[in-house]
Image 1 (cartoon, rainbow, N blue to C red):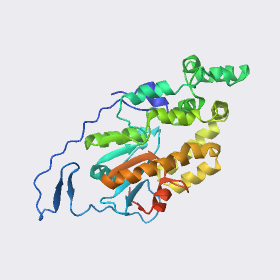
Image 2 (cartoon, helix red, strand yellow):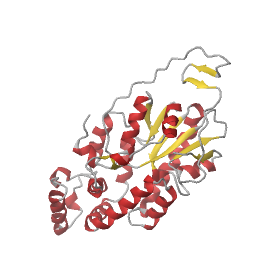
Image 3 (cartoon, rainbow, N blue to C red):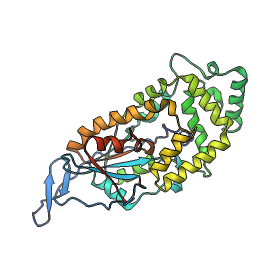
Image 4 (cartoon, rainbow, N blue to C red):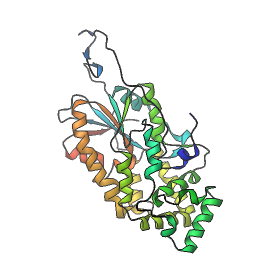
Amino acid sequence: MAESDYEQKIGYFEYKIMMIPGIKQQCMNCTIAALFVCFAIAGCHAQKEQSFIRKKNTNTLLWQVSGKGLKHPSFLFGTFHLMCKEDIQFGSQLKEAVKASDEIYMELDMDDPSILIGGMLYMNMKNGKKLSDLYTPEEYKKLQAYFTDSLHTPLVLLQKAKPYFLVGLLYPKMMDCPSPAGVEEELLKIAKENKKEIKGLETIQFQASVFDSIPYEWQAKELMKNIDSFAFYKNEFSDMVRLYKSQQLDSMANMLSKSEFGSDQYEDILLNRRNKKWVKELKQIMQSEQVFVAVGAGHLTGEYGLINLLEKEGYQVEPLVN
């Protein structure tokens, strides 16, 4: 299916309508000699757990979660919501981790057709607020001119959109490639090949509410700042992509903490609270299922990142070669 202009431009809501078949795997009769045990629900799991190669340092996007009574390890993977399609590559161990997992968890259930529709619906501000309410007449004219001349998108079509969502429309212009794509979108293809069910840690309604909790006035200033300092942000975006491609999670976190590219003022809302909520849910999920969790790379590191939070809960979180 060809990507629409809308899918290419929107950051969080760059989703394709894809239907993943339900998992239905039949088990053959297994013998002790073959080291297989047949499970009615999860399919066949080897008696001898598949071994993954550990990384000697933390420069990786792929992590294994084990211990604390888990029957099988689960996996964490850091994604990047929008980058050049040709730069998105997956290692053999990631593919094996997806294959070994029962289900794939992402921030949203991205094979649900309602996600795209919901994204369009919930991207609007509440209480009838409009962009023209957030800017002076001079600023609004400047915004109109930029969207018309640089983005070739009439601002009148986006009059009620949350300003922070509109920042996502700038990202394709920061990339020197004709076909931006999301890492999650490419990961869906591997999940589909392996007939894995996709589930979401959040709903589109919840993600929309996160941005509703951040003052629209602040979002409007961020949008204008990105436009006024576009060359600066383009360079920073390129640096961030470079760090992501080299899997330097700690360097990415360090860069965000020092740069205006990050949102320190609302980090608790955008990252920390959500991470704590996810860990609480994953503790229950991982007890009964082997899962592959793919979320934005920024959610993995730091004091309140998923890696540290899971370790504090008593799990062993190890870097894997990717």
